[in-house]
Length: 51
Image 1: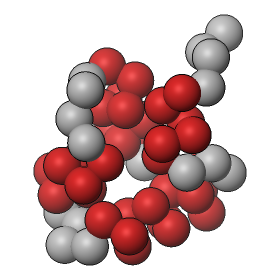
Image 2 (image 1 turned 120 degrees about the vertical axis):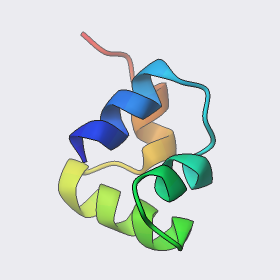
Image 3 (image 1 turned 135 degrees about the vertical axis):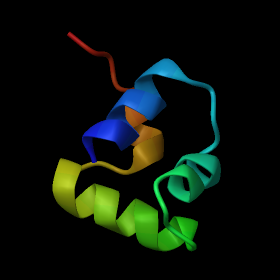
């Protein structure tokens, strides 16, 4: 999930492209797993202000 966070923060890749890079065949499964670990959806995480 750390790599997913880095990709969300530093690239303009779509969530499904990030999921594929990380070995997920299903972007929905990736999003659910990301939410369980991070507490936010990938889309929400990307838009959150980093401090």
